[in-house]
Amino acid sequence: MGGEISILNVNKFFGDFQVLKNVSLEIRKGEFFSILGPSGCGKTTLLRVIAGFEDVQEGDVLLDGESILHLPANKRPVNIIFQSYALFPHLTVFENIAFPLRLKKFTESEIKERVGNLLNLIRMEEHAFKYPSQLSGGQKQRVAIARALANEPRVLLLDEPLSALDAKLRQELLIELDNLHDKVGITFVYVTHDQTEAISVSDRVALMNDGKIIQIGTPYEIYESPVNVFAATFIGETNLMKVDVLEVEEEYYVVEAPGVGVFRCYKDKEAKAGNRLILTLRPEKIRISKQKPMIFENVFHGIIEEEIYMGYQTKYFVRLDEGYIMKVYKQHVRYLLDEPILHWKDEVYVSWDPNDSFIVEVLTS
Amino acid sequence: MKPGKFVKFLTFVTFLFFYVPLFVVVLFSFNSSRSPVWTGFTLKWYVELFTRSYAIWRAFWNSIMVAVLSSTTATVLGTMTAIGLYWVKNGKKKSTGDTFLWFLTYLPFVVPDVIIGISLLLFFSLLQFRLGFSTIVLAHVTFSIPYTMMVVYSRLHDFDKNIVEAAYDLGATETQVLFKVLIPNLVPSIVAAFLLAFTLSIDDFVITFFVAGPGTTTLPIQIYSMIRFGISPTINAISTFMIAGTVLIGFALRKFVRYIF
Ligand SMILES: Nc1ncnc2c1ncn2[C@@H]1O[C@H](COP(=O)(O)OP(=O)(O)OP(=O)(O)O)[C@@H](O)[C@H]1O
Ligand SMILES: [Mg+2]
Image 1 (tube, rainbow over the protein chains, first blue to last red):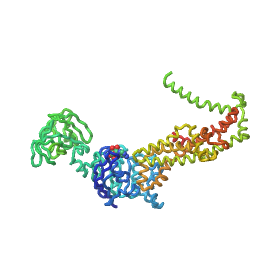
Image 2 (cartoon, rainbow over the protein chains, first blue to last red; image 1 turned 90 degrees about the horizontal axis):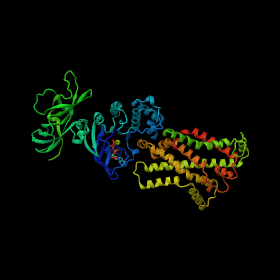
Image 3 (cartoon, chains in turn cyan, yellow; image 1 turned 30 degrees about the vertical axis):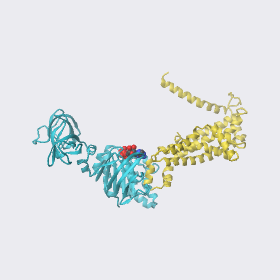
C-alpha cells in the first residue's frame, strides 16, 4: 500500500514572493498527518506541490522513496480533495465516483461494484442518482472523498475539507473522517487552519507559519511543549509573560514578571540570571480559590475582573494585585457541590505548579 | 414627481420607444392601402408575399444558409479559441503575451462595421476571391468569432478551476478533460454563442453590403433595395413574419439566451 511522503528542503516562489521556505517533512505510512497554520501561510501551496499542481524551485518530494516531481498530476498515486469539493456538475453522484474508474477502462460490473462499495462507505446509496447541485454541503464533501478514494491512492490530500460547513456538522464529519482513515488505512494529509480540528484527530501535526515549518509533533507535544511564542499562542489559549531571571536553580528559574511578582518556572531552556524570557502558562493549569492554598510558591492574590460561563467551564479574568490580568479556566466537575461559586469582584487566589509555566523564548542572553 | 415614479416613467417610455415601431410594422402589414394611412384590414400582402415575392424568398433562404453556416463555424472556432485562451491563462501568471491576445480578441468589437466591410472587401479582392455566397459566409464567420468566443469564455471564466484540476488529479489526460469535463459543462454557453452569431448574421447589413458582390443578396440587402422604390407592405409582411419567428425561437431557447449576457 505504501504512502510515505518525504518533503526535502522545498523552496517555492511565486515571482519574487517566497511561499515555501525550506520546508522539510516526513509523513509516515498510514498516518493522519495535519498541516496547521494561519491563512496565507502556504498550506494549500504545499498540498498542491504534493498533488502535482505546482512546481518547486528547489528541493524534492519523494513518495515511498522515489521522487515524484517529474510526474504530472494525473500520473501521481495521490488524490486531492479541494476545499470547494470540485464535483463535476454535469454528472450524478454515481458517475462522479465512477469518473476515475471509467478513465481506467474498468468494466461496467467492476464499476458497479466499486462505486457501490464506496457509496456504502460514505452512506450515500440512496443519493446515487442525484446531481451535485441537489446535495447538502456535508453530502458533497462525502462524495468528493469517495471519488478521491475510487482510484485507491496511496495518499489522500485534504484541503480544509470541512471549512464550508457549520460547526456541529464539522465535528460529526471530522469523526467520520477519522473512522474512514482507520478503515482505508492510507496516509491522510489534512490541511486546516483550525487548531481544534488538527489536534483532535491527527497522529501528528506540522505547524506552519509564513512558509516555514515551526514545529512537528504529536498533538500532545504541540499543545504541551510549544517551541516558540507563535506555537504557544496559535494553539489553544495561554498567558504569555515577559520575565527577568533572578536566580538559576537546578530545575527551575526564579523569575520576576512585571504585574505578577516573583515565582518559579520550569527550566527547559538555558538562561542566566539577568536574562529576559518569554514564558507561557495555560489558563486551565491554574487553580483558583477563595481560600489561600496551603502552598507557598506561585500563589498570587487578585480580583475577578470578568467571568464568562461556558457550560463545561468558566473563564475568569483575574486582575492580580500588581496589575497583570491572568486568564484562568476552571473546569466544572461537580458544579455547586464541590466548588463554591466565584463571582465578579470576588477576591481570589491563583496558583500553579512551577512545571506548568515554562520558557518559549529567550529574548536576551 | 417622486424620483421612484420618474424612473418608472422613464422605463415605460423606453419600452414604448422600443416596441411602438415594431407594432407599427405589424399593424401596417394588415393595412389595405399602400400609403401609411390606416384604411382597413387585409391579408393581401401576405398572399402576395407567399405567392409572388420570389426575390424575397430567395434572399431569405440565402440569409438562412449564410447564418447557419457562418454561426456554426464561428461557434466551433470561438469555442476553441476560448478554451485555448483559458488553457494558456489557467493557473499561470498573466504575461504580456496574454494581454496582447486579449487585445486582439477585443478589437473587432470596437472597429466600425464599415471598416471591417472595406478591409474584408480589399482582402478578398487581393486574394482574387469571387464575391458572392462564400465571401458573405467568410465575412460573417469573421465578425461573429469575437462574440462567440466572449460568450463561451465568460462562462469558462466563472467555471471552478478546481473542477478541471480534480479531473486531472483523478487521472484524466488533457483531451479527456476537454471532452469529458469542459465541453459538457459549456453546452449552454455554446448554444447561446450559436444563437448570438445566428442573429448577428441574419441582420447584418453593412458588412454584407461590401462583400456580397452583384449576384447574391441576403434579406436585409433585398429589403433595402426594395425600399428605394418606396415602402411596399410586403416588406411589412416579411418583417412581421420574422418578428414572430424570432420571438418564438427566443422563447423556446430562453434558457440559453441568458448565457449571452
Ligand atoms: N498562483 C499564485 N500566484 C501568486 N501568489 C500565490 C498564488 N497562490 C498562492 N499565492 C500566495 O501564496 C501564499 C500562500 O497561499 P496558500 O493558498 O498556500 O495559503 P493557505 O495557507 O492555504 O491559506 P488559506 O488558509 O487562506 O487557504 C499567499 O500569500 C497567496 O497569496
Ligand atoms: Mg488554503
